[in-house]
Length: 348
Image 1: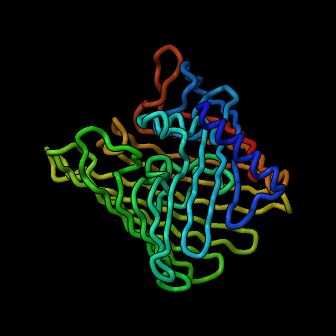
Image 2: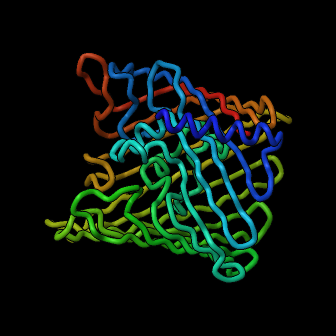
């Protein structure tokens, strides 16, 4: 951790002396989001359900994600280095080595030909429409779909602008949201992304993942598909997303899981935004999670744009499950889970 703060100090010192954040192809930016969550089930370990990785701590003030990013780009090369801290890093990268838990992004890229780029390193995933960066999303918390699919991938990525409104992405990497492979894992993961924006405010996206998440010599292929469309018009916004995955199994032909999410957003005046969401996640055979899970969620959040670079939010979120999977004090369990989340975020 001391190396993180040392590098942070050096970067800030350099750009402070320059008195600008953009200089000769370099750009310095950052994001910080603090939060307070209260779950009415009152978990005694202060941790929210296992299928969540953001805003994880109950009844305490904490930092979800804070990072500083140094970026360089010219006509033919580019690079990104972003170092982070927060409970997002603590829980989402819990199985990674200590150095990797500090790395939000680290990549180098070269232009191979005109509109074709090759990037290698730790990069945001091509899957889904939600980022770990809170100010980039319509809701304070993330959908069940986003929380249980890769936020990042480690590997090589080809990006090609096939048309002015169509971007094609090809991935080869270390697997399902891994920085380092576990012992015995040798399989290469592949992915495809298609992003189409035919009209202003309309985005249609398909992405997939193919790989084996088991150590050799066992091979149980996983094939995952994600689709979403977003449309913003006037003061309204609508998003619909769905995913479906299958994985080979030993005692049956395959296991499957699926999810969907739908959001409606409305701008209220100049500085307020109201967003509603419904989502569902089903993984009854425990492909992604350690145990089977089926959960439906609902949320409503109100945002206040305090400043062009600062956002305050409050959210009410409810989860329901057919089975009693949510912990209560005294070793009891419940089929429901309700929480109030609040956050304050800035970016620079």
